[in-house]
Length: 256
Image 1: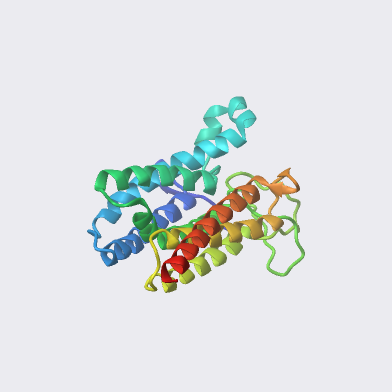
Image 2: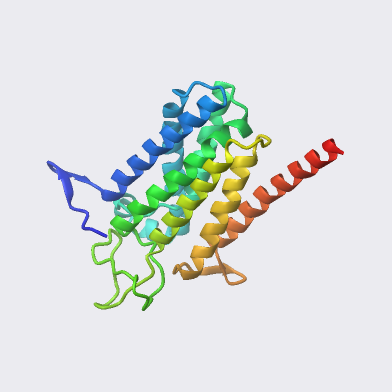
């Protein structure tokens, strides 16, 4: 990771913000390609991404605010002003609500629109994790002696480890896994599939990736030894798997 020292005059330019912008640009390009393939105006992608960005940032910030309510009450101004403090699942929920409203306004069926967005979500998530890695926003893993372990002395949320201590660079793990999810979805998108299949596969694959990475993260368990992110992942995996199984049963019955 690198120091967060970029400025334009007196205004700070956060590394994380730069990567978030790149993530949204990449997501817009991918979504435009998918909208065009599905017969919609690809220009809608830029507006859709703006809606997703606003909803996602608000959702991610609200989720961390709820999780760290005591810290927020103790110092609300500094808590809101920090460059760290975003939760992906909060962003996914907030973005989903915003984009759902966009679909409704534009007359796009929800499942079809969500399928167009699914690959873009995985790619944007991968790029966003690079931002987490470079900024050091606190989502690193447990201590490790593995040769690829890293320190985060310039982390935007503070690094409290003594010299010589290394941790799992979990943002890089997630980046690699989400790139793999993107590759799978991009490969699958041209195969015949019912509406909703791509977004279902996204939540199954991305949820599985996050569930696995949590075993080397430092988040506290909340139930049955599982972290909040793992519980959320299991819910998403169950929802996505259920949809795929139901659709498969319907297709099998229709073919009989």
